[in-house]
Amino acid sequence: MEQGKVVPTLYEWAGGQAALEKLTEVFYSKVLQDELLYPVFKDMAPGHSRHVAHFIAEVFGGPRLYTEGDKGSHATMVAHHLGKMLDERKRKRWMDLLLETADEVGLAADPEFRSALVGYLEWGSRIAVINSNTDENPVKEGEPMPKWGWGATGGPYEG
Ligand code: HEM
Image (cartoon, rainbow, N blue to C red; front, side, top):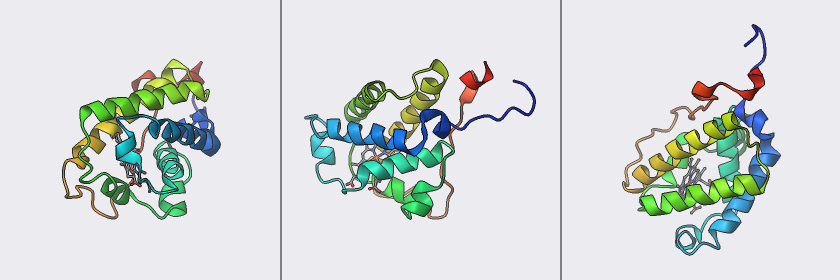
């Protein structure tokens, strides 16, 4: 890459807040129609889909929509999963539906962005399953939010 070239964040590349909110809004409407995931999400808070979009936006290098806007933190996000007793079957369905939705809403589909997106979702969803099988929060209040970048593929911005 040329020296001094500005590397876009995954947040910018994805299309910002509107694109991520669209993704999660359509995704959670599918989740509520899925017989395996419906019982897990049937009592979700009204702002759930927006909060998840804000969390991902912040992890992807966007503005602090979750920690400042929603007054959340990495610890409070993890707390929402404690004791939910998720398993691999539910995680896999969650992943499948989310990636299906990404295609449906026209989220950036270049190999590099999708590699970073899938990498993050695999990581985060596996951690969600682990945390859902305990009642003790492994993340302390005040610990930083996770950060995700382009990873080993680099980015299409290099071309
Ligand atoms: C990268 C992966 C994930 C991220 C970033 C994420 C993010 C979040 C966030 C930010 C919340 C809090 C929402 C709020 O404040 O209203 C939340 C809650 C929750 N998440 Fe996740 N999550 C992930 C994976 C999963 C998976 C794989 C499942 C289940 C298959 C799951 C099930 C839930 C449930 C049941 C809640 C509580 C909903 C409620 O009662 O309001 N999450 N998640």
